[in-house]
Image (cartoon, rainbow, N blue to C red; front, side, top):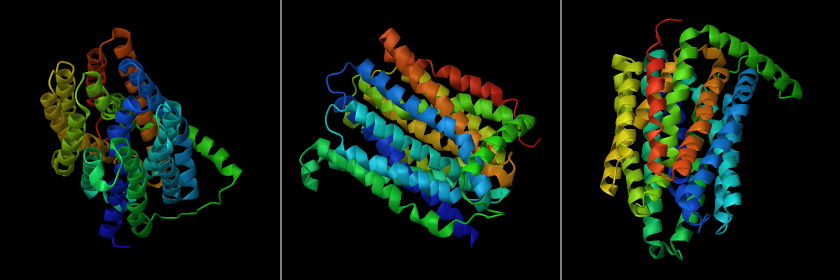
Length: 414
């Protein structure tokens, strides 16, 4: 199989599942959750509910990720596990269309389950990276995935925004009908654009095993072995701790930015416009960071992105106008894809190729474990102080702490 075709087939899955990341996680779900499913509820309470939902979903992924990775490596079926979780996430996403006004608990449940499908599939998606790219191209390949994700997610978000602004032009009754339809479109987009990965990506099937109950016993055993081994790989272990901190801040901003803007009284149309700015800025920026990582090393690129996030967080706690939100959205677009892509490629350099799903299981576990704390911290601090600005300011410690730990990582050493 041509490696370029495999690389593009792999990267297109980022195009596919970014429909969920943009429409559901960052865009219309937080809006709809606050204004439709939590209608009449104080903004700090709805923020807490959203943060709690994100945290519980992340906890489910934390508990599952390592054993799923071990099982996938043992079975030699990383791609199969990806498709299984993607199918589950797609069904839960489409199900949001059926949730009526005020049914926040059902909406939260479907969202949490869809997030499990999305996050679970990403474990196996990440683990396929070393099989579709050689070491010299891994930074660029990882960045290509995120770049296509920003572009694809941005295009679908733009269509959904048009539907919500002009529902009658699309034959829809009102804005609520347009938003609900956008949930269905996200599910369809995710499904259709997963096909290139199905057709073109191949993984080595060295001694595949049958799926039996005993496999999960083996999986738990291999988790202990991997945990012991990864702690012996000093740089990989320190990197995971650093990643745990700074990606917490990144994910929290992604999941809570729209809710934060609403809490400050900004118009929802302006907030969605800010998301579009982030998406279309993120496309070329991710590619640029891939080039920077190849030339100067991925760690240097991560530090550049962390500097941007520190500035964004400090400014975000003080901003007063929606135009400031637009500037911050542009800055986030510059940094977000880069820090995600280079973190993935830096970690891929440090781990054994034959056990990628196991090691990426821990990578995703650390990311999702961080996501338990971040949204909950932001929501709790905002609720306790009755000031959402205090909540976002608390994220600074995560970026600074992660950056300090990253200083100790030397990727060229075992």
